[in-house]
Amino acid sequence: MRYDIRITERAKSDMREIQRFITNEYGNSDAAFRRVSLIQSKIKTLNENPERRPLTRDDYLVSRGIRTLVVKNQIIFYIVKNNIKTVYIIRILHVRRDWLTILKSEVDNLLEEE
Image (cartoon, rainbow, N blue to C red; front, side, top):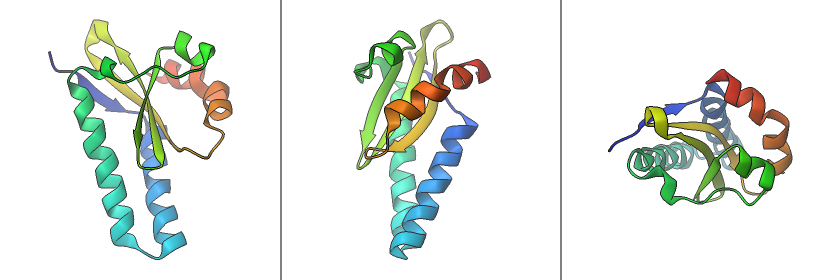
């Protein structure tokens, strides 16, 4: 069965920031567009069997059901709601960021939004 995919406003903002960063840092808007397109295409693959990807390694985030999908040097964080067959993309963060602290500080607010 196929799942609907919902991207939170925060995750959409993350994608815009990724595109801005690559464009500004490397002066390459084509590469920025390709990276965001790759992220979007990988997100679309979650419409079938989204639970194939692992839960995070942190007990608190696991208790919230947060899973990960790595795309190049970004991590897509998402939650699967089986009862409504929906995948919520909650954040997209660079692997070198302190994503654990970021997510712990805002995950409950992100979950309340959906």
